[in-house]
Length: 127
Image (cartoon, rainbow, N blue to C red):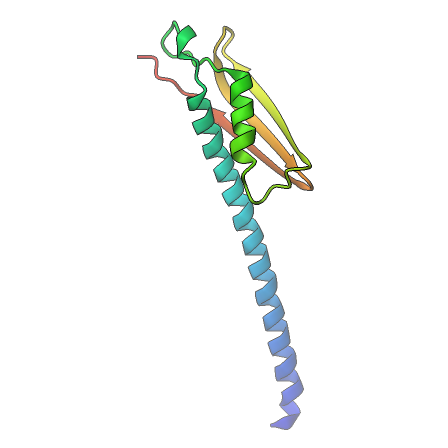
């Protein structure tokens, strides 16, 4: 009975260590996923809020006030607890439809050593 005690303690230690590693990995994955989902929601709602309806002449065209959109997105997404606001860098890329409209928006956020990226396809019905 006592001779098996070191093996049992070692087995318990290895099991506890594996549980900690799996929990740490799962928590980091969840944090990354929730940040990206929050970024996508912020991107979509900010784009809709800053849509420029005054110049929308054709159905299906999405015009955006880019300066207001970028400012609002930085303000809303900057409230995230996962960001280091002093070293956060935002990169906005717009896919235009060849006229004055926008088809998609891609945002890349670099905060410290972490990088988040989201794309929003602005699908406006043609009818």
